[in-house]
Picture (tube, rainbow, N blue to C red):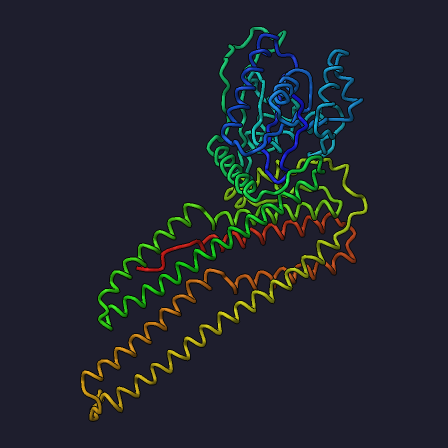
Length: 533
């Protein structure tokens, strides 16, 4: 089955990587093929709406076994070469070269791995870079491996597995600054010429953080289901850069939908809490006893809306999809600037810990050949565009904040007026402070009830304003945007005198990602709740 097929480029793929021995004995190679096929089908069943892709270097042995099975299962293949293809072929026999070229023809994408570590001479170093790239950009690493121990700085299967499991390039050190621990499907195999053979096990072994992997797959599948509901047109043959922009656009649309639903939820809860307050006042003060039923309806309604909102996770989707969209926007801005850097590596500890699926999604999406970056890239659209955007955001936030302030001021003014009227009534008509009452007691009590209802209603309106507008964090939004305006004004000045454009790009990227996380942190506490006690 050919791997080239129409795929929706708005979906986040589940990326598999492969590492393993070249000299697997034929018996174990046959068994490994069946195990790999079974594991691929298991992953497909876990995430039926999520496309699966494979990263492989197409070395003889394990790389090709997994690549062949993947292609048979309709999974697209991206080939990560350790060096230029003609040099790479020097390590193969004539028969292996023929098999390599045949698989290369069927690949969807082929490029040489970038150098991730400090440059060294030698083929082993280049093989290690390709292995690291595959490990870092895959959700799951399939290792056809005998279980041998890793060696520091090595380029073999054991070292790549160790890097994937630890999330660290330094084998001698703990991964101090990354909470991410990878996941490896270990298919035990035996190597030709190794005596004695280790004990062979047919069943695969799952190594690493399976709980986090399941969470990542679940969130990725959820995003893809939401993306498919948009009925975006399917495309084929897009550049990797286009795909990043397309998924970012999809995430943006899904985030906006989540935000609208979240605001509707917050608004409904606030309105129903206000009506509950007013209904109870009428029940208590105006003796409209039948409104006790209305109070019960409002209480049930608030809890039902709150429960449905939390079950459907509008608020979380709004926030997480926004974080993904912004990270992909930063990634495409880096690409347009002609600078190779990957946003998933720039995420903070907190971001990776809080939303591991986003970190893994960025790594999976951002598989592209850095050699295709433009040498005449520019930061003009990035800096100027974001400066204009945040200036508009400041104005929008301030306008909405002023509208909220007007509501509050009007409510306060009316409350003061009602209080003053009530005080005048008590002094001059009700005789509360020793004067003669000009109204009968029954009439005076009726007027007092009117004042109580008016005051309580104003309190309920204030509750609405506090519950609804407060959830929108208008003042915080304005402060954030003002801070970003200052950042881009500084960047615009620095751009004119900057000798190292790459350093400016990375600094801007880190600032934007950090700002995004701060926004995520304070918005996370603004989920739907039940404002009654």
